[in-house]
Each structure stands twice: as C-alpha cells, then as structure tokens.
Length: 260
Image (cartoon, rainbow, N blue to C red; front, side):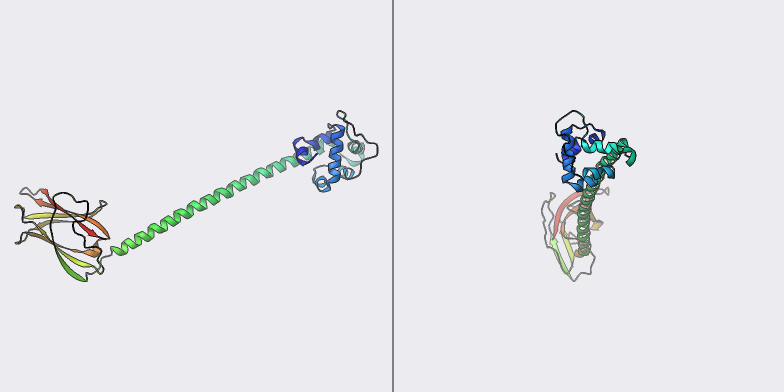
C-alpha cells in the first residue's frame, strides 16, 4: 500500500467508517506506523493518530474478512465517549482536507497558466515595441534625408523625353551630398505646343509636385529647377503634358530621375 493507492481508494474514509477488510486496515496501519510524517498530516483526530503511531496489539486480525474494523479502529471506537470522537466528523474533516488539496492544485494550475500567458504577452509586446522603434528610426532617417537644405552648387542638365512610361531611370545622377540645384532643360522642339505641365511622382505613387503653365522658351526648351534636397533617395517619375488650344492637357513624354 502506498500514498497513491490510499488516495485513489479513499482508504482514510473507509478506515474511519470500518468499511475496510482486515488486511487493508492492517496494511494502512502499518503504512502509518512506517511513515509518521504522513500520519501526522492526515485529517483525523489526534487521539486516533496517537493510537496509529503505536505497535498493533498482539494477536490482532490478519486474515481477509469482509468489513471487519481493525484493532486500532475498534480501540478508537471504544473511547468515543471519553475522547469525544465522532466518526462522521472525522470523515467530514477528511473530505474537507481532500477538497482543499484539489482546490490548491486548481489554483496552482490557474496561476501557471496566467504566468505563461503573461510571458507570451510580454514577448509579443516586446516584438511590437522593437518593430515600432525600427519604424520610428527609419522615419527619422527619411525626414533627415528629405530636409530642405540650401544647394551647394548649380548643375545644368539637358534631358530628352521618352514616349512610353519608363520602368528604369532615364537620368540617374544619384544621391547628391551636398545638395545641388538641378537646372533642367527638356527638349520640346517637336510640335507646336507652347505651354506644358510637369508632374513628379515617386515610383510608389506619392505625389511630390506639379508645375503648371510652363512656357517653352525661344530655344524650344522647357526649363525648370529642382533642389535635390527636396527629394528623398529613390526614383521619381516625371510626366510631361502639353496644353492644347482648349486648355486641356495631353501626354507629351516621360522621364525618370534616379536619386539614390
């Protein structure tokens, strides 16, 4: 007989009620005698613990008979009046003890689940905080890169348009540090259009600027200037449109600036 068997078979309750066989009762008494610490933890009256801590009486029952209380149980029953021992109360005390043990296990499991959940939440929060920090750092870098600065020099570029929207830069000066003032001239010698509209979008679709009603000069060129520090690193699509006699715009050509 061991502790697991005692708990699973409700040996303590059955012992108090006298429902054990003689051999079961003797095995339980022997276990209590061999394990005094376990005996002291049992929810049974102190006087019964005292009797179970003593050696059994010589000649006590050892055979297997149905529902015959052991010598220690009978001895305890014989002193009910003197010891104020109530078997029902003892069984109720044992039941409360077992219930408390089970409740403690439930509480411990609930606490473990809560600790695991809190740990998982902390990990998720840490990952989100790290991601947010990276986003803020990247945004700060981009703001620094696109902060308007006075150009350190002026550089003139004469560019040619293409008829179809390009997928790669047609003009790639790269990232300029210190910034430059880009004096751009576009060849507009073909056709009779005199006024143009320039629209500059980043390749991700973000509108950067739009210049309307630019007149073609006497050299039949459309000329405008850009501060390179007004643009962040990346590629920029330049759409050139012309105004017809009705004031409506029509596509004339395309360019792509590579500033990275």
